[in-house]
Image (cartoon, rainbow, N blue to C red; front, side):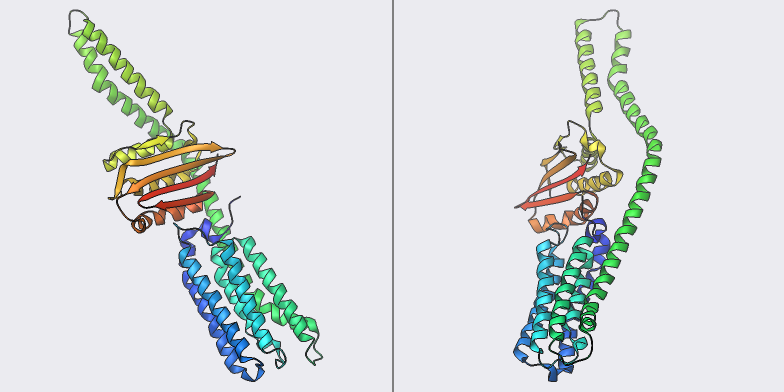
Length: 383
């Protein structure tokens, strides 16, 4: 099953969330420094507190860097990066608690839990909902346990559970806000996709007639160009010559071959032909013997067509290098597209990045390989 995340299902909305991530990454260290400066008397070890703030800054820098690197061409925001950021944030909170272990009489003014919650809020648009739940629960468990241990050192009549709640709420509140935002965005996008698919299926029958008429016009044009002139010349002659017989056989072979090709041509083959003819370039190699591309959804076809149009019409594209193949494995179909450009990889990335973001949203997976000036794309879908 594909992941349910904002980044996969709505990449444009995720791109718009980048300022939120930067704000969260800046807010966490700012709150740490501010609260530390306001409670200097509670610090037992300034060095440990300094290290805690440094670790938090590292976590925030990693968050921004990985968001910037996780674009359409490179890999997604990985599970390892997610875990590293959360672990560093929790570790910073633990160091901050250790730095004021003996002198901190009010756990509610610690910046550690709040900083972790802000980090989790910044991660919300880029990770699957399940991962966000797990990381929030894990961070809350560790910080709540730390608060319970620290509360035992305090001479207070307040129940230990109250301190635990005070420590956990700053973690869970921002995390819950981020998760709620991600869930609402994903569900809204999924509802929109279902509605558009229903409308597309309802209009599918209206599209068949124009397509059938287009195919009929192409075949009539073929007859008018080859068959009708030949029949006209035969009728004007007194007798049929061996040359006429040979020409009739050649025309029949040509027409039969064209009809067979048209009957066996898949959707991706027809699309590549149409785009290549419009761009005035060679067709390249297309393989879809089982017509698996015909089973793509309307959204998937739109995304692939836009990608093919971007590739084949790019000024730096080498037409002879293009190939597209669709193969089946199990219940899935895999698409492999290869192209060569007269540009460096950075130029290739700029060409295809906007389209790959949509490919990620409508297909199960996407693998991008850029070597020298060669670009290879692999993605799959259920058939």
